[in-house]
Amino acid sequence: MENPTTEWQEYTITSKILQKISEKENCDELDLPPLYYSVDPYALDALSAASRIQFKYIGYNIIIENGEVTIEN
Image 1 (cartoon, rainbow, N blue to C red):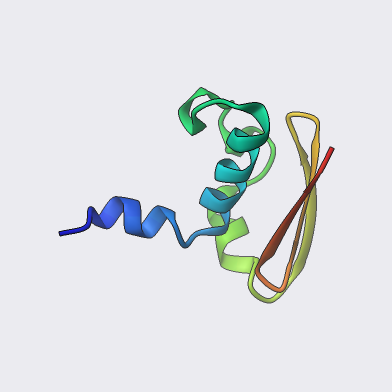
Image 2 (image 1 turned 90 degrees about the vertical axis):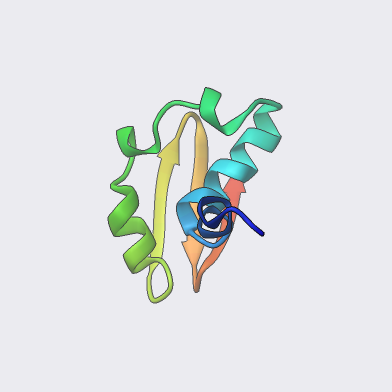
């Protein structure tokens, strides 16, 4: 049986962002600074499907449009 927490994390915008950044930084997601230092993660998850959102996080430009995440250096 799948872990419900893991399943939930795979589908949130904030988890997608952290997964992509950790891959770029070659580290575990837990080693990254908290995302809430840059943006409210709950608001981000709530607004991401219907909005275009752009913000900076640890030197990366994060763009969310129509639920898709783009990360630029």
